Length: 139
Image (tube, rainbow, N blue to C red):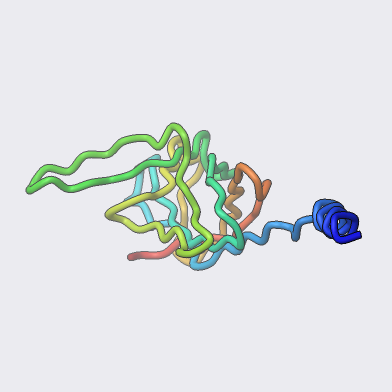
């Protein structure tokens, strides 16, 4: 009888659907590029209810949007693409910034104006696509 009760408890637990992943994107902004420049950097803070991975981004304002990471080693700055995305931990937000992980917008279609709101589409491995409205502003 005890084995039957344990089996039933296991089956019920296995049949219970998992809670849907929740992704929240905050503080989305794009740094105002200088006049005539066709590249810009975008930044967001991502919170997730479960571990996930930000795989990529897109924006109607640019031909490409790639995840990059900037690092300083002494006085040398290096930037590298994050080909496999950026991890998002359930225990700590992914906070993008000018001196770390960011979204590099290349081939910006038109001049971005300070105060303009631009939709960014973020693609997550498990969380799907999330759209965030990014404000164009100075640092």
